[in-house]
Length: 103
Length: 192
Image 1 (cartoon, rainbow over the protein chains, first blue to last red):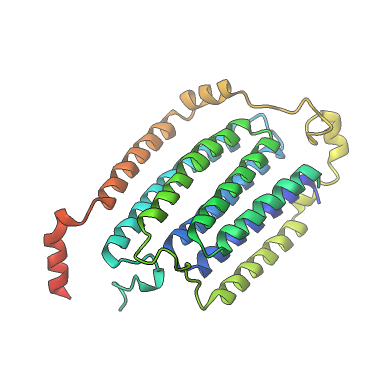
Image 2 (image 1 turned 180 degrees about the vertical axis):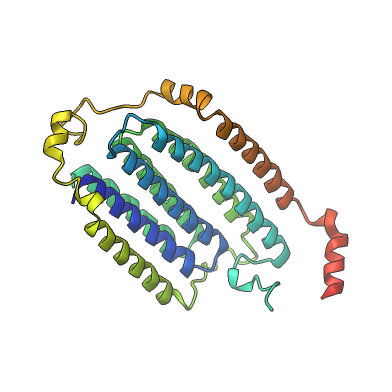
């Protein structure tokens, strides 16, 4: 495998670990951690394709990852605030028990 | 595949698996920090020094602290009880494994990724492709990044600043105690 394919495969593995965690775990914080892992896998892909791409002297890959990291930070802050607010209401972080909108 | 990539990749994926599989939430958060360190090392290996340092600053410095605080604030009356795992966990894991197999097949059969495998001889002549053979790899100076941010990317940068401000204010408002909105909650209770 070429180095680029190694990085892409590693990123796919990281994405799938995050996906499995986000689907399998019932604690809302761990689900958020899984989503963070998936976002990081996407960032790794950006950097790998930028470095091994045809013109690594262009800055688009780095810029995209910097913006992506900033948006992920905003997402983490809002997500954790939501989890804390939901915990205040339901007294649990188990996503199975957040059934207030269940029809 | 080089040894540094193998070691750092194994560390990253192993700690990610541990973060997703451990029952104690604090252990999950600590394993997540190791995963972020591994990702920062991968960025440094890819000669994206600034992104690696931003990763350390933002993820290890801020996001993991946020997660630890959220874990501490949502510890209920039973802090010793392990975090539950769904009964559908085998399904979730099999879905993830299937997704990985599909992606790996796509990677191995992708002409865009495979075409780079025979390239190294030519690219090594360029002095660009394999970082360990070519020390003259293209590095991105932070000054160029800053100039680019202030020139071409100034509008996205401002929008991002607005987004971060809005997210911060929104997070504070969402996480406020429910007392100021008891009337709404009372209405909701009535509607129930």
